[in-house]
Image 1 (cartoon, rainbow, N blue to C red):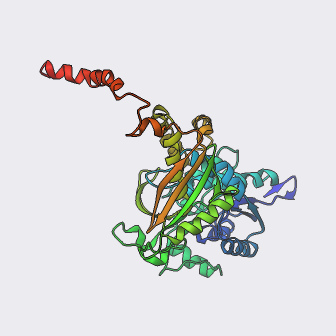
Image 2: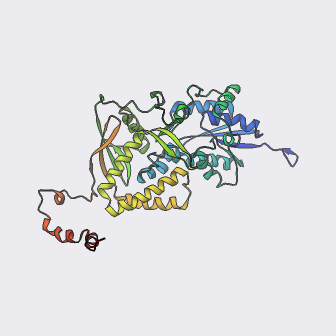
Length: 399
């Protein structure tokens, strides 16, 4: 390509993970799309250090230019804390991959804008949700969006062979074709025999959690909350990143946080998904338990709808939808009283709340006690006379 008599370099920014799909994308973007320069952007949202290091080494070998961005704190503060406030869950999935994708995409966009590059690429397939999560961010720009996996209709085995032909070392084989995605909130495992919903997952797929065992003693942890987000563990103040990391280790020892489910993807396909998320399981259970202590019945009833709507938008990657901001505004308001602590017992794969307290509790031990005379039981008689009145009237009318 020439502009004013000078050669113009064709460049593309690739959202890069270091895995099979995005590694294969680098030579494909040159060979099939004709790009002269591939710029990779690896965003750290809490992947294992070894994955970050391997990804950097591969990118330095394969790409023309490489950026690595530490977004761990931003991920916790701007993505996971709102998720906790919303009790974020889609059909039982704690949204670990879903909530990270728009942030990763936005960092790739930042590099593209900074460099004046008008092409953005991702390594998502055409069968999953991630393509939508990336492109909801990418398509808000005037950049061209490129999706080699989808556009070239590539199969997993073809990718493995192609990688070998191009000297790309990837931690995937035809015998162990697990596609694994990790960040600080969750670890997802899919592919291979796991695509059969009747196939029992082998223990080898799990990396964060030990096999739940009744032989391991239970453990109680106390989580402190302020304005709806976790701020302490066993009485020790902690930043969110450190607290989540510690709970992942503690919960993993007890086998907490395994999910094996059939999930309804945005495209309408059902997919078998396996996840590990010890800290998420513990924190979401503790947060919801504390809400029941401090929020009113009408607040809790309405918030169930807000939580569901928030979770669906997050699952779809629509974090720039106006409704998402509206829901977050309600959540921030509702969480001002969600202060206190919850004691969680971890045992044999379970995380069970066994105690909770708050200075904002809408709970009076004196009033509900069987031994209390603060309230006269006789006062409830008038209420009881009218409770169910219309149903009784209809019954008398023969309906």
